[in-house]
Amino acid sequence: MPIIYLNGKFLPPEQAMVSVMDRGYLFGDGVYEVIPVYNGKAFRLDAHLKRLHNSLSAIRIREPMSTAEWRSMIEGLLERNPGADQYIYLQVTRGVAPKRDHAFDDSLVPAVFAMVNPIPPADPAVARDGIKTITLDDIRWHACNIKAITLLPNVLLRQQAIDAGAAEAILIRNGYATEGAASNLFIVKRGLLITPPKGPQLLPGITRDVILELAANNALPYREADISEADLRDADEVWMTSSTKEILPVTLLDDKPVGDSKPGAVYRRMSALYGEYKEKVRRGEAA
Ligand code: PDD
Image (cartoon, protein in one colour):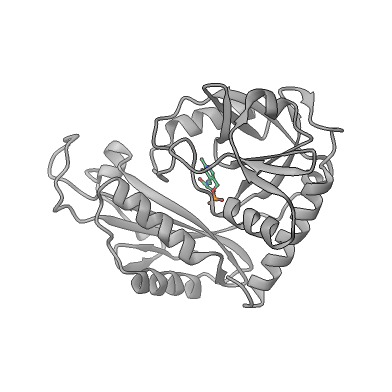
């Protein structure tokens, strides 16, 4: 029986109620985080809390808890929801206002919701065969670095990919590939790992940071640089990354093979390094 956290209480989900006047419900006015948990240990919690802080301040919601309070709430949630590989979904909305009004009042009390869900085990076919993706025009706004719950473009783009028999959409803005509908983008070209630099065009993914760190620590050449649509189509390897899916090798892009149409050697190396890192987290030797 899962237990969720809502505004200071741990509750069964069916007892957790929010007002229809909450601005998250009316305007999608809020931000969120997705934090993996391995063997009861939250992965990169400091980085996730820092990104949450950045998202909150970008949309002018005052931080409802201190770092110590976030940590203790998450501990309480994990104690009540034991499991192996899980993720925490954490959401903060601007709260309940007396009437529906686009403009907001700084005195509103933010609503905090968190739940734990299992991370489904990775499908071995993905590491063996890779995934199919399609490119789509990036129809999102100009502040994609904010992890906003307002995800309508991402929802529609992902669904368009699914309808085309693909697992993810790679988004193109002004001739450059930015990221996926819910993942970051990497390519490999002549042994060099490339991912677009952080900026308003993409979410600063925590998995992305871990991968760049692993590349640096293991002497794998990498660069943060813009990826043109031509670079994407000409890449030897293409990967999509996220907290829940980790690293997905792309072998089909708009129905054309990527590289030799098999997950590449750099992917296999990075996937192994990522797996080792996760094991360290499980043993409490890394965070
Ligand atoms: N999404 N870009 C977008 C648009 C995302 O939504 C996500 C993650 C990422 C990867 O970020 P991270 O490595 O920190 O998970 C990049 C989460 C998993 C989601 O919305 O469920």
